[in-house]
Image (cartoon, rainbow, N blue to C red):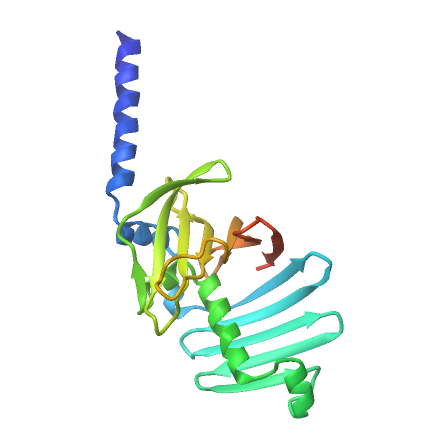
Length: 242
């Protein structure tokens, strides 16, 4: 009789988990994930420094110091690779670039090293987006698919949120993989689309996240390993030192 009761209990719990996974909406999943990563709602006032090392095959490491100050709309990036040091500062609508200690750069050097304000803003958006996930999925122009899928990746089951963007922001389609128990973000993936908006499956990358660093009381993935979707080619790993 005890065995029967135990079996019934397990069946009940299993059924509950399946139903809850099927019925949770995209907004619900996102809110739970944000509560896990940013339980004190600190992202909107984030003002801190990130130290990141990028390891790539057959290439020297790139060390980056990243300062994100959201209240003052300030972004600073200093990258060091071999003997080359590049600094970008974006303050609202203004930009400053320093290359190996020089701020007044000859046009030829600026062009050869792709040093311009558009690139500075690109870095600002890139780092703020990736290190601000999943909170950044609340930004205007983000389109959350309310149907949550269950998928397996690398032998683990995830709750998967599909996200696209207003055409003025971008045409890529993203998938965010969350642990079904803790709602921690553990994988994200993006694809390019064709002119009709259909996903091109041989494009884009997926990023595996591991470990966690707490910065300003926000749980941020420490390790991000990048791979091509089309053939699983390893591209490199970002390691957050703080």
